[in-house]
Image 1 (cartoon, rainbow, N blue to C red):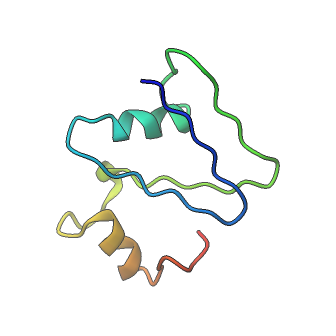
Image 2 (image 1 turned 60 degrees about the horizontal axis):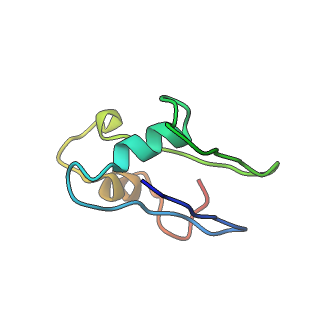
Length: 79
């Protein structure tokens, strides 16, 4: 409730929190998988975004971060 944030330029956003705190719900709202109760989501014209859900992990032994690293991606890589 009451979430408001802005990501600009080459900034990246990493969402972390306790189980049940709403991380997946927030991602589903941002990606339009579910409707927000209130407010709006706006993307700039040249925005590239990605979302790696827990269900999309091929190897469940990895965390999301470890999985991206196994693909050769790191925090300095645009994806």
